[in-house]
Image 1 (spheres, helix red, strand yellow):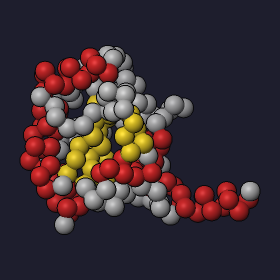
Image 2: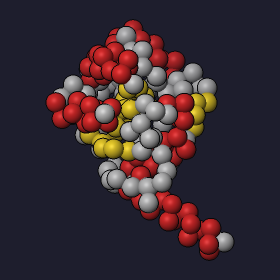
Image 3: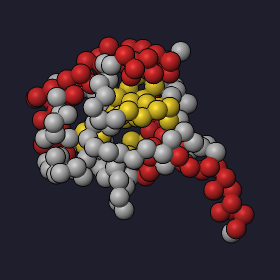
Length: 177
């Protein structure tokens, strides 16, 4: 038992995990293995429909349309942990994103991105011992995580950072090359 725990700790400490180790539910409740995105650069964003950053949906969609043909995928994860800014059901969220921002990138079921009920994917993204890169707690809605083609975390960006900013685009271009 001690050996198994040691190996698990060792694997976690070296950042050997990747997003490909996780299954999540899409906005329609269907199970999705994130391994389906192998070989792509993935941008994971926790989103909300009643937030000051909600207009970022427009630029995220524009970014997705520009970069999807180059092998970039955006994954949106609604979260209601920041001042109750995503109170709706999955169907209401889906309808809002489609009607207000013409979102076509994959959206997923509502998750907790912090705290006791934090989704395992977000534990990986925010825990340096698991991702091997950085420990960076989610500070608000629209925090962005860039994942390399190998499924491993490259970098996270704070909520105010635009996906169209030169710094963000530079990170995407580096991940693609």
